[in-house]
Image (cartoon, rainbow, N blue to C red; front, side, top):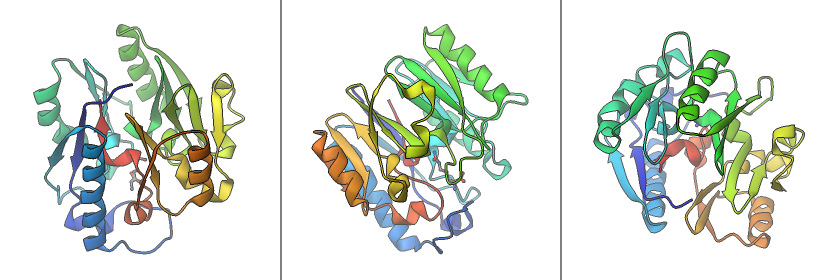
Length: 257
Ligand code: CIR
């Protein structure tokens, strides 16, 4: 699991109009920008070459680039975001993907899919069926993965309060270990792995992000921090408070391969 590249996009002035259910108040745009700079700096510190795209005023949520594509070492898939206001974000990602990938596929027709619903664990992909990703989109993606020898499993996460995407509730930390929202533990798909379960009051921190030697953990979740440190992970804390206000987290802010 060695990552070398990342794509991010600067937050736009229209970010205050992004979709949210969080009820944590309005983001401060200046702090939002500072947190983005710190995020990109940490990705570089973890060894990635980071391509930072310009802000897109037409798309308030466009800083959450993870939802626009799925990237593998030798191919990429343009998603078809489930929120209508985000649909156009995927096409905006095409030019930079073309610079980096020879083979690019696309979710199309009635399929909808957000990249946040895709969680890779070793050589297997878990695809969340959510309010954003439908069965048609998930099946299209699974068929593409199949071309490259990856198996996929679909996991229904609809109705889990506060879990917008699959990766809002489960993330692979490497070393056979998952970090889970406690409500994800019952999913049979995850039984065979080593599990670290965050306390429910820190469910947001299940969206921590392993990049090479480091585990990026959101600031403000002390029990989760202790949990992963005791498990031996080298942590880097990042304040993403302004992204949390818009239902986003550490993984949402980049595409990585
Ligand atoms: C949305 O509702 O689409 C954005 N406000 C948040 C997207 C978060 N993305 C992610 O978890 N991959």
